[in-house]
Length: 110
Image 1 (cartoon, rainbow, N blue to C red):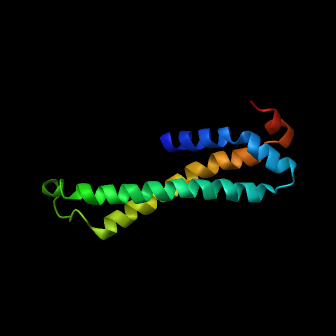
Image 2 (image 1 turned 90 degrees about the vertical axis):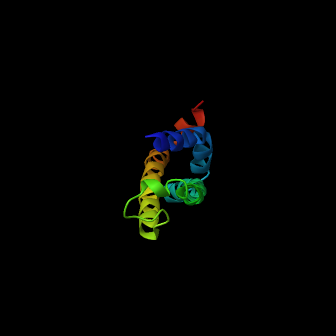
């Protein structure tokens, strides 16, 4: 929910920009790709920071884990893939909503 809220807020801030792009003839698919690319940059930075932080903190929780190494590659990759999928879906919903806005309404948006 928090990620969806952040992505939705980011799209809301860019509503006027989206309206201008659409008024100048940008296709809806192009705008959707632009929004997803921007979200992908944020998601990539978050995943990289989270993976590095997780690997660094793994040495502190070594005693709490039973049957799993703190740097188990399979677990880390599965967790990162799951987070990326959820994050892309959370970014897709507000981006899809943004491209459905009529340009004149987006330009009047405050």
